[in-house]
Image (cartoon, rainbow, N blue to C red):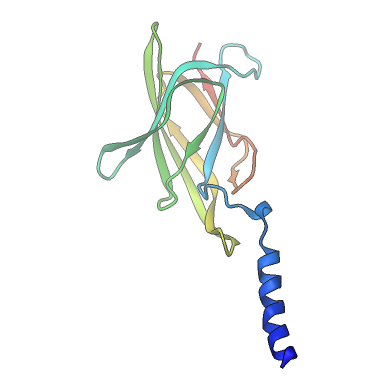
Length: 163
């Protein structure tokens, strides 16, 4: 009788003890990590922009999506991706007293589904293929690390800003 109770009780104890706070789930979103650089210096030096806005654009409906970044000063950012598609279009804008300039960025990538854990479920890792952009504020874009991996902290893209 004691053995019949002990076995299920032991399994429950193991189950509850195996889950800890170190396995907390992150947002589950694959975001492209971007650094901003000056195109004028001739050397690779980061730059900071003020009044930066970033929002998505839906090519199918031709509608703007919600703001991802709202009027901040930054030199690096996380650009959200649409994991239901093989591309994401974003509008990147700098609005200051002196200027109001925006560019469109189109990120094209391949998606690969990855299992994280029973609690967190699945996410998508991305492999960046191409970045197409307009040339108002942005001089050039370089994919420095094409793998966009869940919970990884590496700069994927360098955006060089016009002087």
